[in-house]
Image 1 (spheres, rainbow, N blue to C red):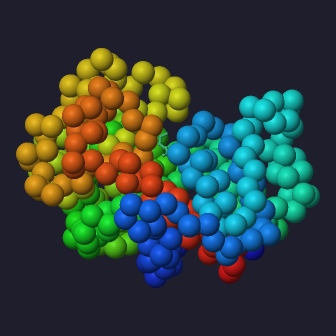
Image 2 (image 1 turned 180 degrees about the vertical axis):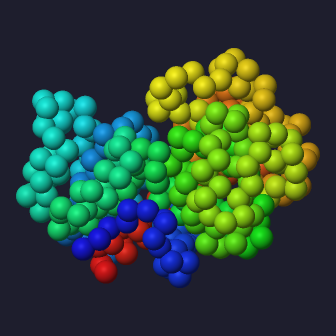
Length: 302
Ligand code: NCD
C-alpha cells in the first residue's frame, strides 16, 4: 500500500487524473461543497509535527466532505512531547487501524522512511525542505482554472527556494508538463544544485529580469525556522525580493500571482499585490480542498 509521498515519482497521466477529479469536486460558482459518501466508514489521521493552518484544515475538511471520519493530532499535544520516537508514534497510531495517515514533519524523507515500515498508506503533507505534493497539485489546479496552459508557461518562483518543499514539488510537476521554470532569490537561498531538479531551469538573482513576460509568479515565505544562520540582512529583503505592484508591469497582463501561504505582508509581498485581481492566493486555499478530496479518494480506493 502506498499513499502519496511526492510529485517526483508520479507520472503526468497520474497527475492529470488527480487534477481532473479535483475539478469534479469543486462546488459550482456561488455554492458550498456538497457532502459525499465516497469514503463513508473510512478513518483518517492527520498527524502534524509542524505548524499548519491551510493544509491541516483542508485535509480534514476534504475527508469529512467525502464522508470519512478524520481526527487531527498536533505533535505538541501528543506523546512525542514525552519522548516517544517517530516510529513508535506511527506504530501506535497504525495499531488503531486508520485507513491512512496524513503527516507533516520537519525531517526531509520522514514519510518515505515510515512508509517502508507501515502497511497503511501515508500521505505527505510536507517533509522538511523536500516535498509538499498536494500543494503543487492545488497550485496546478489553480493555474488551469485561470485558463492558462502549463505547456510553455513561464513560471517564476521567487524567494527562499533553498528551504522550500513547495518550490521542489512545483518544479517536479511543472517540468513534467513542459513549463518554463525560473527560480529567483538572493544567491544564498538559490543553490546551484536546484538546476539539477529538472532540465531547463533558469536561476537568477535579478527579480525584474525574472518577472519579464511571466505568466505565473509564485512568491515564497522566507522560512526562518529552517535557516540556521542569517543568510541576508532581513530589513533589505522586501526592497530586493518583495513583490510590489510596479513589478507586475513587466509580467504578462494576465499574470497569476500565487503564494502557498502563510503570507508575510510587507516582507515578500505587498498588500496591494496580495489583495489585487491578479492574486490567486485564496483560490489556492479553496482548491486545497477539492485537490485533497481527489488525493484521498485515489489513495483509499486504489
Ligand atoms: C507551506 C509549507 O508549510 O510548506 N505552507 C503551506 O503548506 N501552504 C509554505 C510555508 O510554510 O511557507
